[in-house]
Length: 174
Image (cartoon, rainbow, N blue to C red; front, side, top):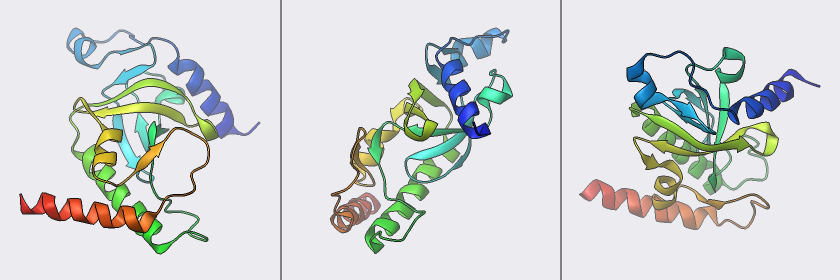
């Protein structure tokens, strides 16, 4: 069994337990972890518009360091494996990645809710930044489409790109 698979399996197991080790009271009140939810995770880097990497404070580094998080409920264009993708999908992927990076880099509080192991052994979670849903934000900006597993095909990335650009223009006018 490869190390990534073992690590992902152990992360999933650990994430199902409550973690509130000996922390100072100020941190415990605002950044406690429990029942599949983790507050105040630390952004490390993003991989694309729907997947990023975090460190989870007060969780053993084997389980809480450099953990890949997949945002539940959305799918964005693919940056890697460009072969077979449209130019629009690739451009949308870059736009979504930049938007997500900007949000996570400026975040005061990043929270993972209802965590579970997803496809490819990543952690799947509802992600909130400063109490706002990332998936709703990305959908509202037309940078993502709804996705709850299954086939990812059938997205007209060029149409979605036009919608996203329109929304960006109207945001800039305000």
